[in-house]
Amino acid sequence: MVRSYSRRKDGHVTEGGMTALERSLTLLGPLEGRIMREVWTGSVTEPFVVRDVQARMPELAYTTVMTTVNRLADKRLLDVQPIKGQRAHVFRLATSPEVFLARASREEVEQVVERFGDAAMAAFAERLNRLSPEQLRRLEELRRS
Image (tube, rainbow, N blue to C red; front, side, top):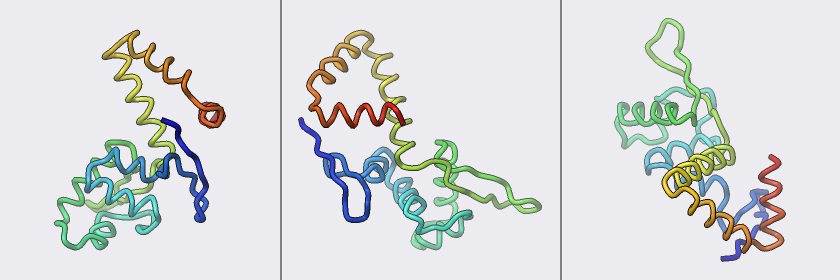
């Protein structure tokens, strides 16, 4: 499979038609993805509290949004700090879709290698040998960043 890379009018680079944001959202659950889309696109401005997110999703219970936002903080997508003298917490973006995608990729590779050992390494090497020159150039850029 040959991947194509292009730059959209909004400046985002796509790989196989998907931006890093779109790829990152596929790694999250439906509600987590919905919330992170709001945060990553700036629809919820930082810093924010759970009520700010819940206002964008009024059909959801506050506790549902609170639980999901806290899970996103546990996954290191959001930073959380308590508000002095209150029970509430303030949240900020902890990582970009690109950084999250890179981190998730590394974690997945580690799991595959742990599970399949040398067979996984051979499969990765075989796949690298089939990359186009453009893919090799992009891979080198990603490796350096």
